[in-house]
Amino acid sequence: MADSETMPAGDDEELNRTIRELCESKAAEFRMIGYDQATGPEIWECVSDKYHKSGTPALHAIVNDILSLKVTNFMNYITLSIYRGEKRR
Image (tube, rainbow, N blue to C red):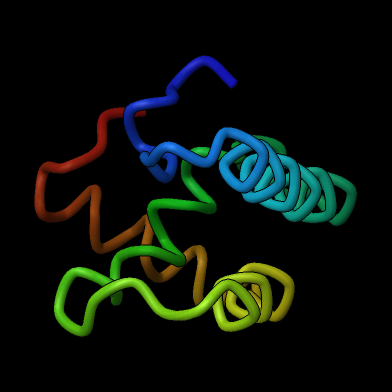
């Protein structure tokens, strides 16, 4: 994954690799239904955005958040990020 700075950081490389793979899998799912611009790092940014306030949850909650992410929530996040000037496509 090219943008590793936006992905989870830490000492457990296997855990980070697993989360990256889950995010890439979700991005591939979104691309299959027509959202061709979706990327793994963007999926992680969207999912982890709420962790800034409450802290990083347990692994099972992270996995659930990634796998249950709906395309509408993802697109809302991307749209708001663009309006805020956080993303440039």
